[in-house]
Image (cartoon, rainbow, N blue to C red; front, side):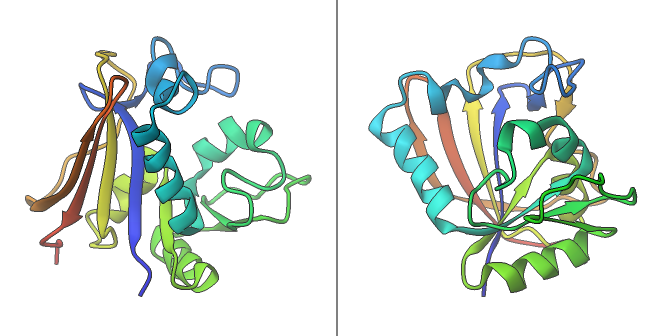
Length: 191
């Protein structure tokens, strides 16, 4: 069965964007270096992290804010060419929306559709809001964070308040000059 994996770059203080993120400033103020481990002289270990995520992902579930900010950057093929993207939103899709994006009103339904579309490959969660909706519902199997040595001090946090604690098991840790790559399995799920 396909796993649902949240795979995000975060600052040491837990933010995935800085303040004032927008279509013109997708990473927000002060957060431009969150993805340097991908683009600025990545090591073999950094590249292996990216390759593992890309090769193992069959479909993407994202929030509307991620779609609106980044669709022009990704283009018609979406964030991962060949993998369909499901956008969680209650708003209508734009008239010129590429066919690789499907708009769905509920995170659980989006994940169900993504699992069906992705086959045995993982469903990748893209965006903090989707993660914050799926985790308390018990829909997340693994959390991968690429912790960047950066304190942003504000913006979009990856994690939100929870009604109860969720236990994790660390299953991998790789340290490179640009990031500490951590992989956790969700051990207990909310009921």
